[in-house]
Amino acid sequence: MITLVHDGLSVRLKSWHDLSWLKNFGRVFCVFDQLISGNLGFGVDAGEHKYFIKYAGASTLMYAGEPDAAVSRLRAAYPKYVRLQHPAINQVLHEFPTAQGYALVFQWFDGYALAPLQLHMEHLRSLPLIEKLSIFDQLASALVQATTMDYLIAGLSDHHLLIDFERKRPLLSSINHFERFPTSVPHPKLSGTSWYIPPEGYVIGAALDEYANVYALGSLAFTFFGNQGTRALHDWTAGPALYEIAAKATQKKAENRMHSAVIFQTQWRKAVLSLPRL
Image (cartoon, rainbow, N blue to C red):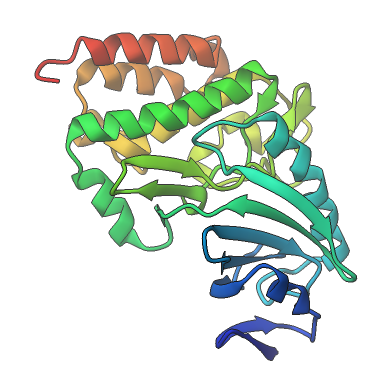
């Protein structure tokens, strides 16, 4: 392991890498060098604006693959951010190559990820129901929009779900693993955290369709209003009508779920309007 220093902050890598291009963007105020994706993340303060730079090409500590593969994945992700623009999805500003890698530049978002620190998940769950419903609806809207544009929701993780608790705004920080339909399960499974992956997402080569996205939406509802482990009614905090919708969306058999993400959203919003004392 070697340690590079930029603006007084350490960047830990397996081997030396030229990061001198960072000085063109301003002062680095935070570093993310423990990502398993093979990317590095940098928060940069340019004075009037702050940016988040996602960079591939360096040999990062927690990544077992080749840097060139990480570069290829990040390049492939750029058009997804361009096509799927939404207030709740990380807004890409531009891309650029370096001598040894490739980077995407995003607007900075003042929020906290729901993982790995349990503190932020607990903060989310302590919010008043009406605030949680609003934050959830913003995220669900982004995922439904992606679905209507024929994208599979893949790679979903609490690490990528950021919340600005002051402004009550969410952000999905990574859509790198979203794929266009038709698509199938890669080896060894669909990417993402286990509770967002439907049962069919573990069958290598199985065709994936909109039912998988409905499952992801239902699972996200349990993240906000229930228990990710049990998905039991007694752990649910948003009323029985919304529980029934989330439970139907996360049925093990795909054909028992709603037929589309739009149907899930329509039923969910109708049930929200029927909640008392909102």
